[in-house]
Image (cartoon, rainbow, N blue to C red; front, side, top):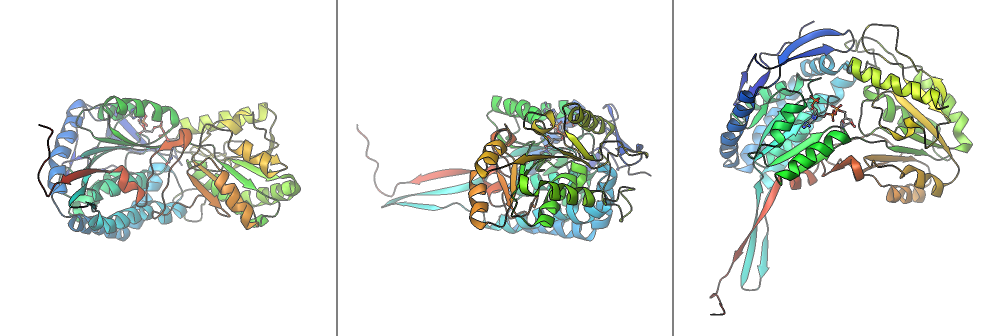
Length: 483
Ligand code: NDP
């Protein structure tokens, strides 16, 4: 199987190669097969990307918002037409089953381009009256934005960062995770086919050092990172050095609270979606499932039964709904956490092992009797490991749910309407769910509080993070000076 792109980088509207860069192997996680070989960006490639972004941004920002929006919406249309091919590529890049990627990845990227393409023409300032005098504000682009992606949603992340950045008149240089280098190149190609001027959306490959070189360059005005909290700390600090704008979409250890009056099957469904979708490699997952003691055994029995119905297999087969970990490295990290869970006394309900097949598969794993101090209840695992913790009262569970440095997401299942809203109000998290889990529509802000992030992606909120406001004071009368 091959998924070799035309070249490693996309700069100034064209594919570019520099074979002097370190080799990046793209591995299909279901077999371990190398499907593409690319090169990390050399300093010369980084320089080309920055210079082309600088020139392209000026041309792009000079176009009207309506013109920019038309181009973004055209790109959305092309993505829709090529959904199957893009979904297969996403599956090869990440190992996620085609039964997911056909409906989630290119689709979500398309929706971002459609949504922000629709907003582009309506981005205006305001008029502020001061009696005779007045002020008007202008919403301006920031300039060159750098996007740095994690490996779990390569198409979506490239679009969630690119669409609002471009709608506001910025240029973007996107660096995918070296684990999943393929999809963002397609996004760049499609944007240019749709009419984005050369240099406005560039993709360069590389390891953390390439991201770090971009973040510290004086020509860069904004950095948007999707990644782990430790990387976020480094990137935020480097950006602060140059007083750059940032968006940080980082990790989580989110609580999902299930009260004993919840609809059992819906709650089980929420826990499955919030732990096993994309084999658990989702930042907002509700990995600490707090279940009220009255329904604990019924919940565990139904959860086990439904989890064991997962169809693990070739992700390119649409009957498969549970795929591998993205890499051998991630698989080993997750297996290490499973061993810790067992060693620290959690009760294994199902799973817990590598699957007996090629590739990086781990069985969907459920632990019960997990306590707040166990490693699996405190650290982000980023794999298919669900921990069930027991609780008695609402006050108790709220204190425990919020007792974490993270604040990305949180969910509650209950049939008590008042309690649902009280609990949502009490969550220390940026993205909350009532009787559902892990929805991320482009119309709603998405992001974390506490160590899970800074800023918001999606929705009109994202516009504030990719533009700045200039105030222009206008005096209609004479200037009064003291001397
Ligand atoms: P990492 O933090 O390891 O890497 C994220 C990106 O940052 C990669 O492209 C990485 O490059 C790059 N990078 C690493 N070091 C630096 C540096 N010093 N300067 C600039 N860039 C750098 O995350 P993963 O790729 O392992 O992704 C998993 C993490 O992402 C999880 O914690 C998950 O929760 C989080 N995530 C958050 C989401 C959100 O929206 N809140 C969504 C999806 C994931 P390289 O890979 O080459 O090292």
